[in-house]
Image (cartoon, rainbow over all chains, first blue to last red; front, side):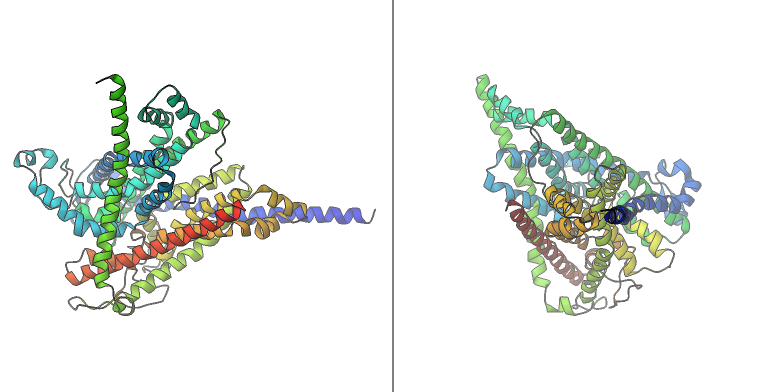
Length: 328
Length: 282
């Protein structure tokens, strides 16, 4: 007995030591994950110092982007990014919500899996393939649409501009297609977390299908807004497809047909051409701001989705028993 | 019209709208797939996989170097991302309640939302600029950074699904925590984790933006890690925006190969998930 006691003590101490080793060993990798995000912010800030010092806030207030003359104003890119993303959201939000409602509330069970697969496929197609399709199929279609518009409409600022096909409308359409699967899959998850009692209650009161679903949507509004914002974050950073169809012209215009450019687009098309340090630095500063904006938008959308899921867990006894889906 | 029938009509219109939006989303999908397959299949031949790109003006040739390049950068990316992703996922699930795990989870989600072009700029800053050389390594780094959060989050979610009794059983038999995780918990979640890795691969194999100024491009064949390499996606991009008909043709063929890779990967992943779900039901 007495001989065993110290031995056991030692083994429990070494057990604690290996557990600590395990914690530290895996913790190092978790630290690496955090460090990468910090390093991205730090590196972008460091590389854009030159441009920040030279132009200050004027960088974001002026609209002349002329690398040859050494003039860098990023306003047109901010405008192009926001305009194209907002247009894409206007197009995609009703469709994405319609899909989410259809899959989670309306369609027969046997159709659910195939539809989920198809919408996920929409997200799996590489951006470059959308871009290729955009150049050779969508842009000519948009050009035909432009030339078919009556002259009266073409006078409006919204539709003015040369009928070239490339431009804001083509970019917004392609972005909308790419954003739909993201918003709709999150909206679907959010709808899934609405307790069945909500709908049953509505039906019991004599509601029609639409009224019951409207009640569910209203109940899930926080999460739905989160889903739409998540799509917005995707649209802001989308690069290849937009670059290929927007026309790469840094000009501010409300016209749907005007060739413009976005923040991600100018990085893709001009980064390897940057021949001076200032030019490169100015481009990195655009990347830095894109990083910060998407960080804010994504955090906010996650906060909304998360707060919805959380209030769900605390307010009802129905624990979400559905299996966690592995999604791309 | 009575109030009731108006409400019923509104409801029917709404249901119709939802069904219509599903169709609206499937139209572009069908269009994209149709064009990629029909245009791509005409230009896809053995040469595409075995020949090098021809100089401008000459027709024919293939993308053999780009196919090898894509394998190189995605392979390098996985080499770097799989260990970091899986082990940080293990940390996040094992110490799920801790503040540090929450921070790591937040970092993973943030990283997942960072636009790929920004990751390209970052990789350029740390792996191209200091060496004054575009390289396969820099491309692999950029792609690896994109893979990490996907793998980490999948690993975490799947480990949390493993029944607590399995871990407790191992611990009760006197296993250390590391032993319990690596011999019992991790293996039972392995098919799912492999799914996560395959899905991550599918996503980054189609990435172009982070490679534009890291791996850059190369008209010649190389397997050197410190040299610029061509990749399928960047090649499709350069060919698509070029003015040459023959290059457009090859761009479509490249797009078809890309779609094929993505499809195979997601079908594989799907198959693995099915099996995993079957195992858990048992």
